[in-house]
Each structure stands twice: as structure tokens, then as C-alpha cells.
Image (cartoon, rainbow, N blue to C red; front, side, top):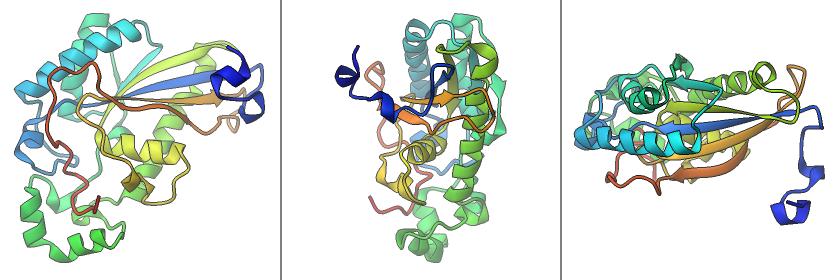
Length: 252
């Protein structure tokens, strides 16, 4: 494909001929029991619901066909994500490395509550969120902190391309994680300002988002991630309703 046909020009590229490409396939977990109940999960929560288990099988089939032999599989260590990864790992015979930096936002004392209960018990905090303030959710973590740790985790992962592929080649990594980390990772890739993740619809259960980055030979030669695709669910035949409640209070 020539430069014009691809929609990208060589002058736009951050890497040279000796660069590698890190392709990260970000997968949100399937519907959990707390998703179905409308509870805020944060870094707590339950395993998958029956619908979520079906979604995990469906995304596993898609990933196994599209990415049958990735160089790496990385996962949040939270139960709902670990369970989502299992059908893919079983089908491909792969194992996943856990990275706690890929966890959902820490929702503090909001964790386990219905959104209506949070609004009733913590009206001042919800009012601050609606004003656009990035407060520590329930005294736990704010989105800026999550964005920083997720960016660090994904850039560390991208740098591993140097050890897995040669110049001009692409390293593929499957990353099982949560809606919050995916949203802030995409906001970071697009260069959106703090709170810019609020411009993005929350990823749906078992959706796939793809980020690419050029990786040079030195530690400081890793380019900004580029967004290839966001929130893809065309392969999911067991959809959920609204299943992201960790962004409670945001005006959409």
C-alpha cells in the first residue's frame, strides 16, 4: 500500500527503518455479577456472570483466529479479568503474565455500592465529579493516577518489542484489562487533556481496542501510541446493557 492509500505519510512516522512496532490488543473483561447488578467494582468485585462467561468464549474465538500466536499475553490480576482470559489461554495453550498496574480504578468506599447508593451517601463527591473535578473516587484513586500507571505499564510492555522481534517487525501482545484503563490509555494515545477520557464512551464487555507504537533501539525511542481501533464488538453475539458504572457521576 502506498503512502496516500494508507492515509499516513512517512513524515508522520516517529520511527526509522530500524524500528519495531508494538501492537497491543486491549480486551475488556466480560460482564461480571456486579456489572449485571449495577454495582461499582473498582478493584473489588466478583467473577463473571453467565452472560460474561459466554462473552469470554466469543472474544476468545475472535482472538484465536485473528491473533493465534501472540508474543505476549498480559492481564490484570482481578478475578473478572482472569476469568475472561481463560477461554483464550485454554484454546491457544498460552499463559498470561499479571500486572497490577492494569487494574481498574480504586473506588475506595464506593466499591460494591449501587450508583444510587453512592449518590445518596456521597452527594458532595458526586457534585464534584459533575463539575469536572478529578477527585479520588470514594477516597481511593483519581483518573489521573490511573492514567499514569496504565501508561507506564503499556510503555513498559511496548519496549519488550526489542527482545521479541527484529527491526521492521511487529510484536503482538494481548492485554486483558478493564474499561477504565482502556479509556485512559486511548485518551493518552490521542493526546487528550486530563479528564479527556470523558469524551470517550466506556468500552463494552469483551470489546477489543488496538494501540500501536514504534519502538526504537534506545529506552527513549518509544513513540506515542496510535489508535487503530476502539471498542470493537462485532464478534460478540451475547451483548450486555450498560455495564460500566465506575464512571459514576460523569455527565455524558
